[in-house]
Image (cartoon, rainbow, N blue to C red; front, side, top):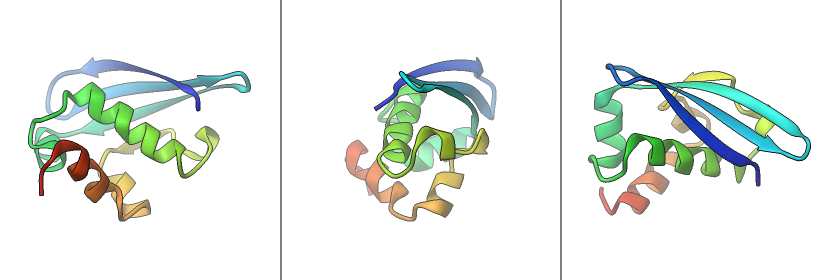
Length: 96
């Protein structure tokens, strides 16, 4: 599995992050936005935003190669492609 590095570009609402995925075959970079409402809806505040992104990218990488992940998206986009995503995150957060 690729290494995941996360950099918060903005702490405003919405929060903006860059996520870099690197392995021996190269790297990809992704820009992800997340509103405070989305963050609370997904985690109930139980995970730091950066940890939510790491878990989210591990979830994505277990389903598709890094090159197939959108280069720019809103965090809730994951659930549109993978309907089990919110349930997966809720189980990690012990909520819902």
